Length: 447
Image (cartoon, rainbow, N blue to C red; front, side):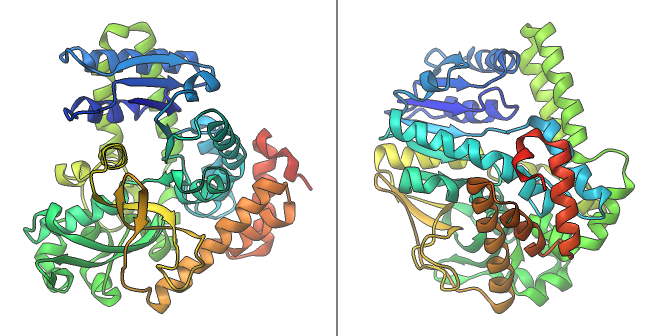
């Protein structure tokens, strides 16, 4: 079995390879092709992977290429994890928004829209190449904004493209462990969009354990989301939000916290990873050690502003190890390749599951996966509050896709203006113009 990783020079690729090394089953991935536009990054990550493979006699063979067609042709699975504009683009996404008094997180609000506008044309071009060169391949999309990118790729790939994210499964796992439940035995009634969803039930043994969790302050305070949102707010909601909803529920406080620091998250990661790639180029024999050190620092500082607002303290080991995206990807591939039935929370077409959205809307929802792909399962319907927020953001996603596909400035303005975290049409115009001035990929949207 051959896996192609688009964005193969990306910092988190070794997580995927480590998961493959741990797969000892029949029919596992035996060949990994890394594709990237940056040869230096490719060489660095290639060195990390080869050092990871050293203890294994039968590790998947790793090859590297800067030719996208060579990478795609013959693939059984394609894992898409590209970052158009690199981390330099992310710093612009953040800074333009913050300078206008708007939250600039990379997948939420203004930053996410700007990121999508330059990413979607590349993602759809990739989808067309896959459809032409490897029509039987399954595409696992981790390119952010994951739900929006997946929806834009579906016209070319149909249900053979599936979006993944580790946030929902991590939330469910942490909530189950807080009650002493076996996470593998629990059904997570979770629904929403990528980075915008809620855990509404923890079902095990015919019993929903979420009410017991909400009634137990000690258990709620024992994991990340409980500390982020607070006992009182979670009880008021009657559900546990995805961590990214902190940007919505505490928007004013988060904006103030981010504006108060000298360095945005994107700038931190840009400096950190630039240092890693430079050091690895000079010390290729130490590539794995350098990567492990850099990753530990990266994970411990994740969403630091939100945790400071909530006085949530440092992330503990359970919060950092509770179900990474690489395990979601591995489980998805095994279920499809070997018809091993699995239950996973994925980004797929709604198909009438959630009544407030149309059948083709990509949602993040529990699915049953086998050789035929992923099919959403029945979950509880949205509350009015959840439906209102999800429908508003879905409208933003679709206007962004329209803008990226057609080059329409008016569609781009609508996307910014409609977003719940952007409170002014005037600000929407200023945001788009600011991004156009700093991002060459968005020149088509110039007034």
